[in-house]
Length: 70
Image 1 (spheres, helix red, strand yellow):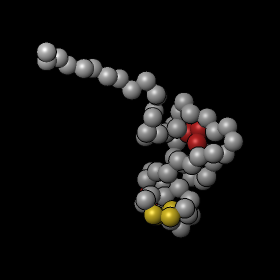
Image 2 (image 1 turned 90 degrees about the horizontal axis):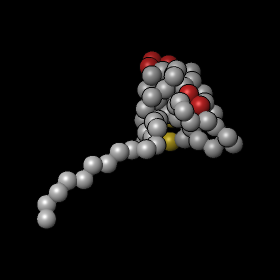
Image 3 (image 1 turned 135 degrees about the horizontal axis):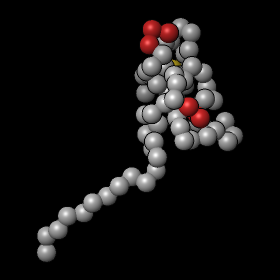
């Protein structure tokens, strides 16, 4: 029997790609709506800070940031 399977991601903004504004410092996890930061557990890294990386906002830049290179 040959068939097809359809799936759907039920986790909203699972890759944290959608931000309500640029992340400019650590602990701004809530900018990846609808996620909230309960205990300073995660950081969001992004490219939207542009030329400010890594001089003024070194912790949130990609690929080189305050935590390493990714």
